[in-house]
Length: 88
Image (cartoon, rainbow, N blue to C red):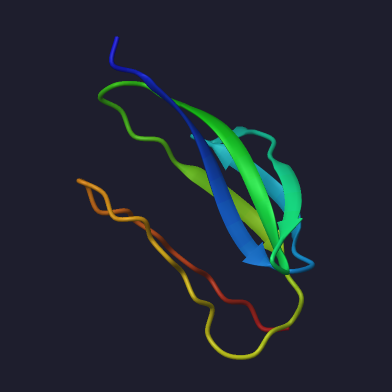
């Protein structure tokens, strides 16, 4: 009662590969597809009522220029996002 099931898409740069994914610390899988020059990773999530869910993606991306753009979908509870940049 009160649980939700959601499809979550993560849009990345074209040519990005998924190294690993965890949902609440447990290994998980995601499908991938291409659209508008981007790689999209799609996850089917069960969101139990009264809990939080943490999705962690480790990506291998082609080298780019500038700072990454991170869009956040507005919600009742603000989304927490972190980005860690590594030198190439």
